Length: 59
Picture 1 (spheres, one colour):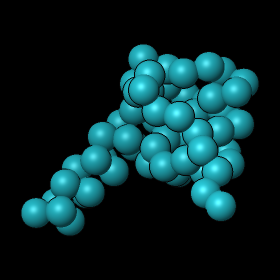
Picture 2 (cartoon, rainbow, N blue to C red):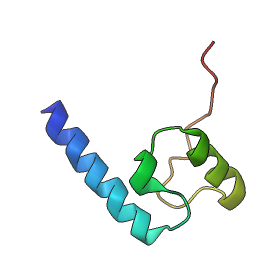
Picture 3 (cartoon, one colour):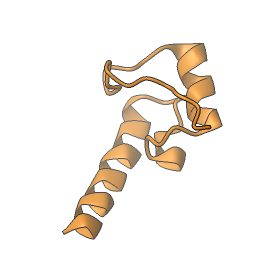
Picture 4 (cartoon, rainbow, N blue to C red):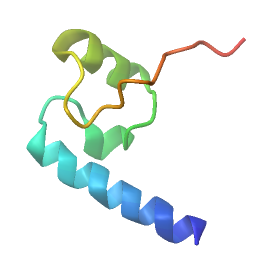
């Protein structure tokens, strides 16, 4: 079930890449990569972004 959920989520993120260009959803699938963070800093959050998410560095 978890694999099916991940595949579905990846497909949704790829579709969102076409709706919100510039964020790179098709590449990072919503995971907190450096490129994703840079896009958020440049463009601000899209309507698809969770407002409750916080960026924290793991020690």
